[in-house]
Image (cartoon, rainbow, N blue to C red; front, side, top):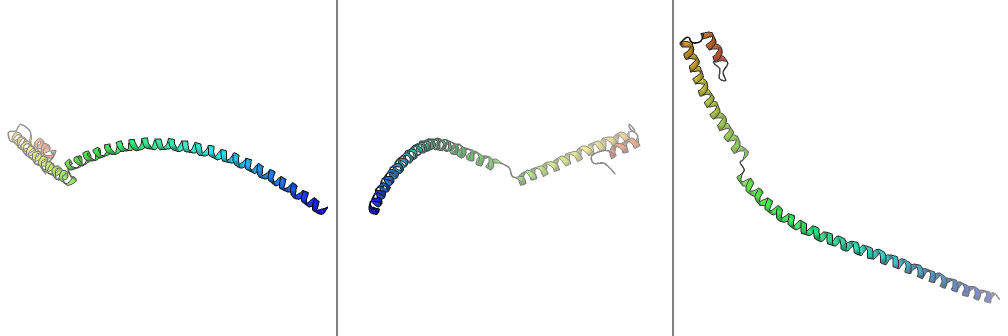
Amino acid sequence: MNKKKQKITLNTLAKKMDAGFGLMNRKFKQVDKRFEQVFTVMHEYAMGVDERFDKVEGRLGNVEGRLGSVAGELIHVKNQMVTKDYLDNKLADLRGDMGARMRKGNDKFNSLVETLALHKAIPAAEADKILKTQPFARV
């Protein structure tokens, strides 16, 4: 009887295992369906991303073309631009010219004041006061 009980137990166990495997198969099929759904969604998303990248690549090509044009214009501007040394030299020349012109004007003004003082059109004290208040004053 022990053998019979053992046989029944083995048969029952085998049936239970078959039922368990059947349940596992159904579960695996459900998981497979879910994976297929996920993969389908991922594929559709990836295709959308590919389309967007294609559009971005097209726009980037346009930007690169415009950038090449800007680079050419920048090179032209750079070639036409004056250097700091050149500008410094020109400003120094201008400053020297302005100084010379101011001295010449100052000399004329001094001459006028001296002439007025000589002809007694203005007092000598006033003439000295005027000559001391100029850009290149006499000391």
